[in-house]
Image (cartoon, rainbow, N blue to C red; front, side, top):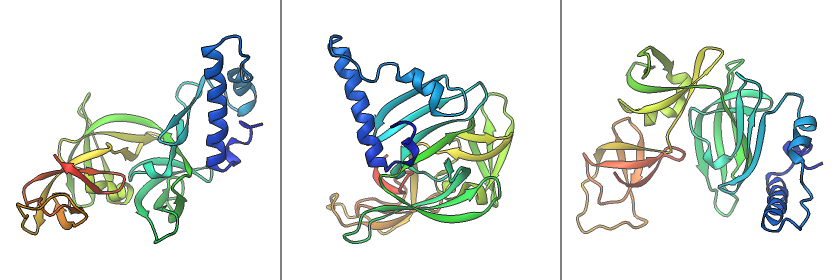
Length: 265
């Protein structure tokens, strides 16, 4: 019943029930005399959970979310559930039964209200662009299509060029497709480019990138990391709030999910 209703449940309820399953397995592993009420669940999943063959499913806990790794017959897309807080520009997700590219992500905390994620999505089938609000705890189905390890080379206007590091073939993506991911693209960056039906549709950004500060107010030698920040423009044009001791020419480490300063590089 839990698995049949999994995608209709509130993420918090889904997480709680998944924890029950995990605890039952753990109790049985520690003491085989304790019956495992969920023994054989893999067989149940294979026969009842969906209308396509699954070779494997694993339920785990990842940053407070339930991760479901799905693999069907060879060549099929795979997907996994991630919390909305892990959304990054360039990702491909399944939303309302359609594949969408994530164009931009904005983390908002309005006063005393609960934090939420404002995302701009692009439907890969129709090309339509729209905004959608996710709660921080929402489970998002991240889709992994065909991924190719590539190196970012350069941009020519709104076209961004990548090279396959194995066969040196080049492909390009437009800013319309990449969205805010362009703020983190620096030459020679190793990155996963995602393909769907043979066409490049997005990128998988690393969790952090190192960017050079090209414009900011002069730093203060006596300053220390506090709540006081100043704006800094990086080499890609991204504006980041940084501590007052950061100077022009320095490299900083930036979180690609929020565009937030993490540390000096």
